Length: 621
Image (tube, rainbow, N blue to C red; front, side, top):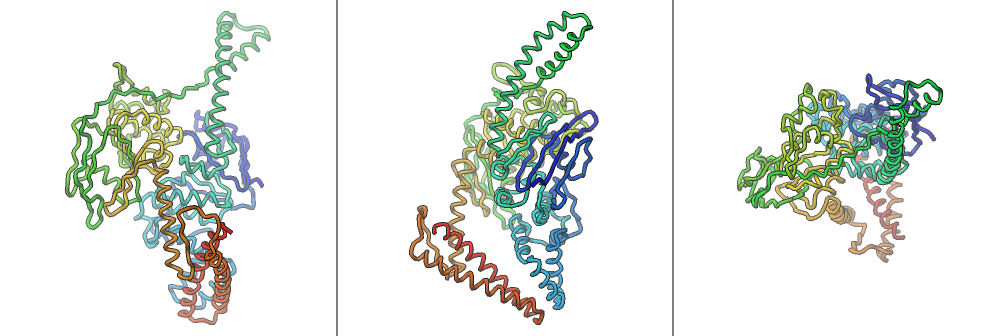
């Protein structure tokens, strides 16, 4: 069943064409991603689909009987309202009904409670309230009385995402849904969308996310849309094949062009039909022959200041903010060519750690010794905005005109810009004309142009497209200095670092040898064991067996447990029906409604708990 049909759509701004004559369709159940370089028109295309921007030509048609929800990169939320009010101020009628029910509970309006309870039961909306609580918990927004005005940009972005997920829409359009999410949130969203029945069209630069969630990739390049029926790995494979074929076509065209150019130069003004046809053919060949195939290699033997034996040393460093500990008697010596990743939940002190290293935040006790030869390059979230009235090349030249290379060579500011996907045609553009991702990439180049031998990168991949990230990764692979990275980009971390500092809060830092994927596998294994223990403690009637090796079949006790669970669940479902019926009769007072409602919530929770265990055991039946 076709949900969206796009036919021959063109969009331009003045003489700049973003996409021309693009056509594609999305069917029910498909999970599609749009990938492109920053500034190529991904967000503009989504806005055109939703009617927020007009197209120059073409048709966009959604199926009439479907509900569509759109998550924009920046949505204006009412600053004077609370999280609770914004979440429940929703087009979804079930959410509005739940809000009315909660308001009636606060007012102890027994008549309204009775009527609303029946409406909620008729709409089967009780599970939605638990889903709201789950989303708020996952995205760390439990304090629903906070006003929107007091929230950070990331928190506002997460509220927008929650509203879209709660819309119960058939078709979700998401623009950068993983921005401002920590690693746990990203992995949860990855799992949620993979298992969702909703049709999906999104823009994201998270390559693991693309790999796991999407079954179709649309690449917007050179004003054209290319379609790949597969996940991110398939896309990379087929894109390489397409570029190889293009390389062959262009090389043949260039050979023909050279021959025809010689003929053109020797001919007088064309008069005959055959000559005119040959000239027309020449111009077509010229167009193909002049196709830019340059994929700049970043094999840059940069001549940086050589690091001495002493680089950065932490000697029993402690740091706290009131009762919140960041470091406790922490000691560590940074080695040459260190490639360290820093991970941990928000608020555990990752950025403070970097600032102490840079001397921007004082330590409480101990000392940090910096070697005489260290030249820091610090790319942070707090870098000042580039002057919008500057030209692109002047922004980089302000730091330095050249980077020294080995053997007396130099790399100019213009050459570095080209290597990082700023073609010559953009060098004299004003900064104000750049997209958000392009501006961020320009700020990164300012850091690299200073020729550091100790790079500290705090979320360097935010707002960078997958092509710019590939270029950055190529540059960093050849970087001979020390590298410390804080990032939520799992793919980037896996490729760039070989050990991690895991900030556990309360001043605890764990040094783990290996990349990010190794760390998460170990963490999930530990979490799984903990969750099983908590399950056993919560319900003493359910006996849980733990085995280190993989199970092949159920033990006698587990078979008995499996059968008991079936009976327990059936009994609990019966209790749930009886309680629901009692609540819907309307003959209880407010206190009785509240008490029975709490009992019902416990029964629902126990049903979910026992059902999960039953499903776990059923895998080995």
